[in-house]
Length: 247
Image (cartoon, rainbow, N blue to C red):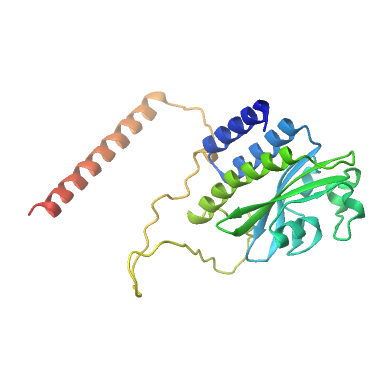
């Protein structure tokens, strides 16, 4: 890759690492890639394991109304082909390909060239990243390498969102109960029952709305009280730990 591509890669990775949510990471990715590669479209499809579909979750170039509403079955369309093969699909004229699936709501009828890269984590497909251009063209090996590197970064972000239960982008409101599944590494063989402790709860400070304080003095007093409470809790934990290790 050229120095310019390396600089773009470094900048995108830094912005993703600084993002506070999966949604922000996806938005950063599609916007920055389209700018760095000078492509007309950059989209990210995530795998909804529950419904076994690839859902369009972010896009720069496709109609905004299609985001979150367009989805493909496993193996459907060129996106499904990328996931099925678990490899890059680089096509000069996408419309002529037998696996092409057209969704009018996306507005993609004007885009010919297609480059799809699987987002893989530990040999498991998490999604598909796609770039498109109006002009029929074969994307270069440098472009492929650029996207493969970014997909490796994105896969870690998606995996972390799964691990902390913060990937509810596919859930629809209903009356059925919701269950969460967590995966971990065992420390010893056998079966055990117990309570699970989430070390990194899905807190999202970016979702807290900004509000103008009506009484600054009262807000400062509440802050001081909260800080004192935390200090007391930390001191209490220290005392408990000291008794626990006192032999």
